[in-house]
Image 1 (cartoon, rainbow, N blue to C red):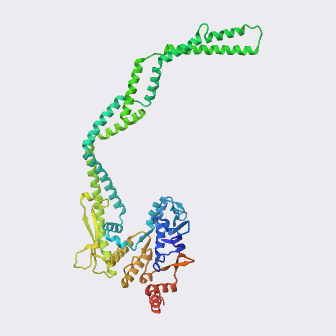
Image 2 (image 1 turned 120 degrees about the horizontal axis):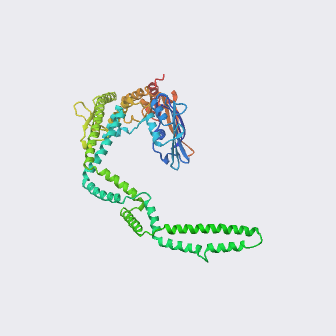
Image 3 (image 1 turned 90 degrees about the vertical axis):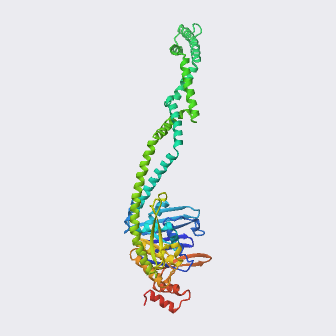
Length: 556
């Protein structure tokens, strides 16, 4: 349950701290005092979208923290453990939200930053908020199925139905595309066959282009290579002026000197080494000349192959080295289309199998809905009778859909019907119910749904709007009854409802030095009597209204 709510610099609220207990908590106050601010702040802590206007004027950020006691909530404990967000104290969970004046928003679970989706996912397990405008959604037929499914509580069954539907429709759409585009596919098949055969014939190998280009360059310059090799060897080996002869003569000139000199000895050693190097260079050039072959036929072959490679690369609008990948890609596409009729036949079998699986699952969902619809009708009728609507008959109507209109949720539409008198046929709510009747029908539905809810905290935001008199007292008793099974927080403007709360908070607004402040205070018996009297008789309190308030609160 919600045990503590902290609000800082949110709207007109500067700093509010509230401790909540189990049972029924009521929140009252004048119109405009800030009751909606409290629920908006709680909504933010649960993952609602933020707005910069929510930050109190002049402040840099707003901050909301909600602390929950989850000792009796194994689903929440499991969720936190699975997301590595549990703490040493496994029985407490803190949701925190920070909104800056610049528009940035940050969310935290147990002090750890988290995506807003995680905050919302966990928040939905901790609190269920029923809005004062919820009765308006009853005018939308799509909402009726959601209400029945919430009552049915067969999430896994409905998820499987939706998954089977998705798989079936994806396969059916693929089959339809193949059948409708058969001519286009055949044309594409012909093009692919020709292109793949061309590339098969080319049989280009990885890195072959680089090797061919290098060989082409060498063969194209063969005569130049030979000419330069002969020229170089002539400079080395010429009889009179060659480098070898000149070095040999220089060496002999020094060797003929009679005196022994260190520099001469070192120079003679260098000449001997140079002579050896030149002889090796001459040998290398001779080997190159003897082994090198001018091969115009091979050059022609390489030119022709590279020309074909460049031609196909232009055809496929790619770089030459990308042709191998293009070849693989086109081959795979050709293989996937080559099945032709076989692929269509396989898809037809797959579609039929998935359709059968979906219908089987949808049938289970329908059976579950029908069984629970009977119980829902009975319970809502009972609650309506408690609210002085004994003659109203509530009915859940199922209408089968044509196959082309099947949906992820099933093969039928669901609509709530009512008849205000036993002799009249049931008709859609939107055509029969008045505003006040809609409010009471909505409240009856919410009370029934809440009785099955595993969410420990339920918030009711002025769901008693449009209700008064003895019906208001009945509504209060219904809410109080829910509070005995969990935690109920109720924003109300009815004294009959407020008087039944286990704890009572007053929300007020004040102006100090031109600045507006919102405050919330827990009321003691005396203060509560005054507030109930105000709700009964207005601003001017009379002894009669105070006495009536004490009577409602069972205060002697």
